[in-house]
Amino acid sequence: MPEGHVTHRLARDLTADFAGRPVRVSSPQGRFGAEASLLDGHACREAEAVGKHLFVRFADLPEPYVHIHLGLIGKLRVGPAGSRLFDTDDESTLRLRLAADGRVAELRGPQWCRLVSGEVRDRVLAESGPDPLRADADPARAWARIGRSRRPIGALLMDQRITAGVGNIFRAEVLFRQRMSPFREGQRVTRPAFGRIWADLVGLMEDAVTTGRIDSVLPEHEPEAMGRAPRLDRHGGEVYVYRRAGQECLVCGREVSTAVLQGRNLYWCRHCQRR
Image 1 (cartoon, one colour):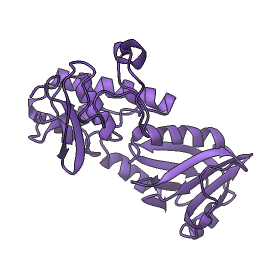
Image 2 (cartoon, one colour; image 1 turned 180 degrees about the vertical axis):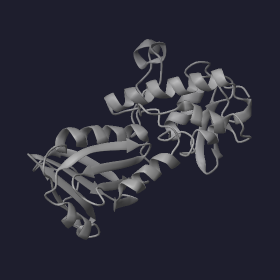
Image 3 (cartoon, one colour; image 1 turned 180 degrees about the horizontal axis):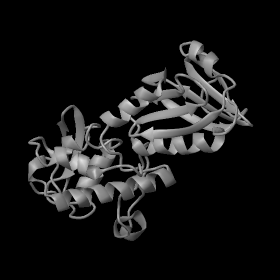
């Protein structure tokens, strides 16, 4: 599932390409057809991300927000009109298309694509945890729940009601970088330690928005510095533990471990992240 930096990067691109312009809106697949006809020709105001939720706002409508959640297989791509954004030209899976001034956005396979009111958008924001990529994020809201929980911090960080936008990669990497066991109970995480986790998440996620990939290793652990081959993975990025089970830890040389925690694969170093 795409992590929060993906939705924020999409919100940035959609705002740059469509805000302030009348937009042609269609649903070749037909599942969003009635809503698309209501939106067609209206001006786009902006796009914003709330964790893994994306909202595209249109002007002068009772329900002005297109609410998108990509889910596990959804993809939204933006590019020049006439370009091939996907490997297929099959429009039977094309849920939504936006077009204006030579730019186009196409959405396939989302978990959600629905037209909603401002009240729904506000409720999603209120029910989501603070998002490290939003200027209005209040990390104290996350700490209030983490500091009194007996659940492991590795599970708490993945809870979108606690820290919105944090997914499996950011969870694994920030805990490694902070040398914290993913199994430590939230109530045993000190307030200063959580402050360091939050600040690290902000930095990592902001960099990922800029570059379009997640890189978490420090300069001394990059391939050139260590004389090792670059990581080859469809997720991209140089990381310490994510999807590196059985390989040597880049810091201590011990084997990276994996386990399933609340239905998701967890990666950590037993030596660097001692319990």
